Image 1 (cartoon, rainbow, N blue to C red):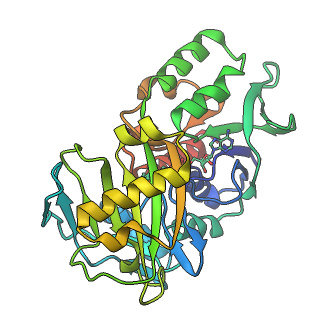
Image 2: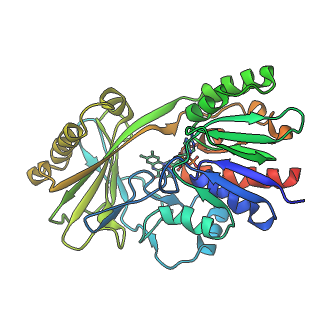
Image 3: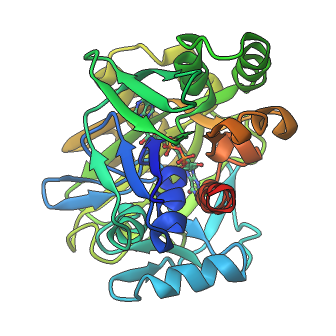
Length: 345
Ligand SMILES: Cc1cc2nc3c(=O)[nH]c(=O)nc-3n(C[C@H](O)[C@H](O)[C@H](O)COP(=O)(O)OP(=O)(O)OC[C@H]3O[C@@H](n4cnc5c(N)ncnc54)[C@H](O)[C@@H]3O)c2cc1C
């Protein structure tokens, strides 16, 4: 008997689950609030540039990740060769302890990871569909999902929620299933806190010849947390130009999250110019912005609690379920959750 599975969120966790389910005859529907897929591991295009404005790359964390990436095809695969260096609170730059792990993205951007996985599935992706609530029919045990336009989707045998924990907790708030279980679930999920990041992209019509791909601030005392040269990724920035992806520190980002984006870009450009000792960097010829309120989870929800709904067909996946704000962690949480769903069929 074919099963109907609804996955909320087309980030790498949701897509990973659909990828695991590709070997079954499940009808998989992914409901995604944005126009694009891959969530925090997505890519933007502007003025002839491509840039990974959230996750910068996927680390070759382990063998299964390496195998999966190579199975997706090596055409357009980019291994960022330049190292990551560090800077401290005083702005002193030093060579980093950049171990020889591969740092993968694609010429067409890191969004390729999600897109290539998705291409191997039969999942239907309904974009610009923001889920507001889920509901369970006690008699039949089937689930339905209601979006913010009040459209009801379903029935589904299984619902998998993958948005960041606070957004997932919000979806559960509207639900009346088994009150005790629900209270425990909402508390476990709602307890996961996040670091906030403002990303600013600064474009220049000249190139710099730095020996590093990115600079990271390990003492976490600087207003800039991370600064990367997107031109180190083949296919991202035309020759003769540079595009800096700046992630302001979580403390600075939380404090200035709602500031005027252009003001944020001006401040970021000033801080970058000072850090790199290059006055030209104060005047980018164009900028772009992205606020990530839920950028990186600080921990995970208690696994035993979030698995309690599985017998009834309610699953959770995402970086917050494993406590690691990393693409590979989110991806494998999705794939492994997909495998548990299959076991239940
Ligand atoms: C600035 C930044 C830099 C990072 N750098 C790196 C890096 O270099 N390397 C690395 O490995 N990791 C990095 N990460 C972390 C990595 O991006 C995440 O851990 C990973 O992408 C999380 O995937 P996910 O599927 O769990 O969640 P998400 O990517 O957040 O996916 C959740 C999806 O759910 C959708 N959604 C949310 N609410 C709803 C709703 N109500 N209805 C429908 N859809 C909804 C969202 O639009 C999104 O597409 C970075 C993250 C950020 C923000």
